[in-house]
Image 1 (spheres, rainbow, N blue to C red):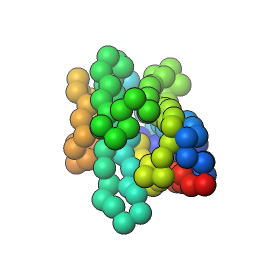
Image 2: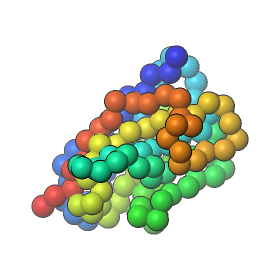
Image 3: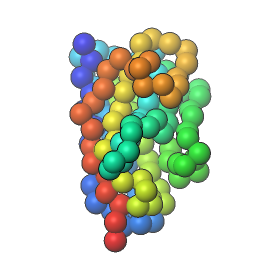
Length: 125
């Protein structure tokens, strides 16, 4: 059973950057797509990015496109989310999630099998 632990969240000023990490244990991430989701205050959880198992395809929602970059290091069993040009509306708890072995990644939360506990990101001056 996979365990996922996110880290790297914190308080940052608008326009700043953060790099989130999602470290997996209990099994390899190889062959598994991974996604990042977030839940802002008073909002429903939303998908923001995903990456296929071989890193061949990455997807982003429009609100983060051009500012966020998802990547993975299968040797380290870790997924990353580089977040630049952060805005107050990016505030929320960020979760990584792993799908069963598949060629595809996607933005439907129920397709994801394992979830981390989340890391808080606050963008404020």
